[in-house]
Image 1 (cartoon, rainbow, N blue to C red):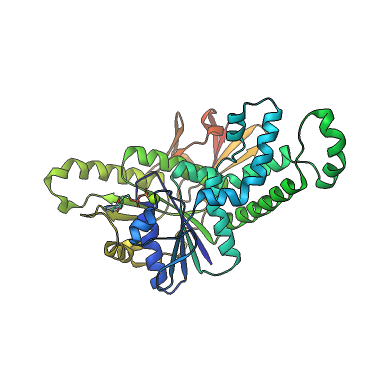
Image 2 (tube, rainbow, N blue to C red):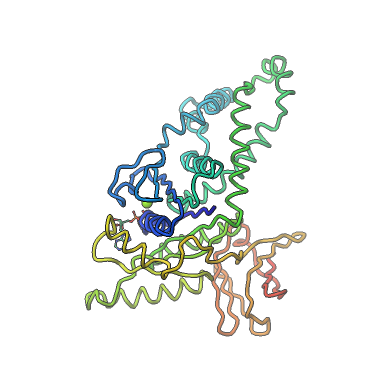
Amino acid sequence: MRIILFTGKGGVGKTTVAAATGIKSSQLGYKTLIISTDPAHSLSDSFQKELKPYPTKVMENLYAMEVNVEYELERHWNTIKDYLTVFFKSQGIDDVVAEELAIFPGFDELASLLHLLNYYEREMFDVIILDCAPTGETLRLLSVPEVAKWYMNRFFGIEKKVLKLVKPIAEPLINVPLPSEEVLNKIQELYIKMSKLKEILESEITSVRIVMNPERMVIRESERAFTYLNLFGYRVDCIIVNKIFPREAGDYFTKWFELQERYLEEIKNRFPLPIFKIPFKSTEIVGEKLYELADELYGGEDPTKVFYSEKPMKIEKEGDLFILVIKAPFVSKKELKLLKRGEELIIIAGQWKRIVFLPQSLALKEPVEAKFNNGELRIYFR
Ligand SMILES: Nc1ncnc2c1ncn2[C@@H]1O[C@H](COP(=O)(O)OP(=O)(O)O)[C@@H](O)[C@H]1O
Ligand SMILES: [Mg+2]
């Protein structure tokens, strides 16, 4: 079983690449499902076929579905939402605001993850591909299991049995509506599912692939995503750079070639992973074109392969020091130079250069020391 998530800024080509990956995967004989959450239904457009909110056959071995968020919300969340609304109102919060607050952050995305879990557990497919929402949303989505834990512990950190006993006595005294058994059951059910999801998403069967274009803003957003994905413990196994202008594009694009070349170099410095490139095609990539892309993409390799399995970066804590641990097998400390520029850390060691986008927890601190250990560079922040 293999799970592949595609993320990236809006419009970079996530849906296109997810569809092409699915085609190749199914051609290699893997029974493949593509799940899309995009409310614009662009997966239907890509395949030029109407898709349903359940697996719809596209071709031999290939199935695709588009998640219907309203329906999912109704199905999984209504009981809890009703309770939360009452709770927030009891705290003197305005009706409309209470309704808003009661919507779990990232629920729409969670719906597609719940489908993923469902099809994973039923073992119906060899490969499941998730065409995710734009980067920021995906990060929120992947932190949902963490957020759920927070809710469970802080908000509902009360034993169900105890709650049943104290509810009739406590409720009038503290003037706070306590959740009913039905609500608690529902929350518990969701919580268990999210814990399972987290386990699957962090395991080695899951890879995240970042799709980007050689453009400044896109690279910035992708870097941020890359850093946070690493921190959350998800494995990014390759980068896909889409929409690269081919030389045949002609003189009009001369400036673009140079610019894109510079950005491609920057991408190499910032993402220490396998990088696959896709040229800007002469028309949009739908129908037949999608099959061509399926053949080109991944340089002829099996698209379900794990292209990279190391975790290139993590953060540890020792006393009041934060340590950024980076894989840097060829570096020696003698020639090391560290430069911190706002949210960026630039590491230069001879020919080797890496630019790391720092998470909030480190961006406000200063690097005070660096050490080498088994091909790992440990940078201490205070
Ligand atoms: N390499 C490419 N060359 C030409 N058009 C492309 C290429 N990649 C994607 N497109 C087109 O760009 C548009 C956006 O792509 P899409 O995959 O929907 O992006 P996303 O899912 O990231 O929002 C679509 O019309 C698609 O056909
Ligand atoms: Mg899309």
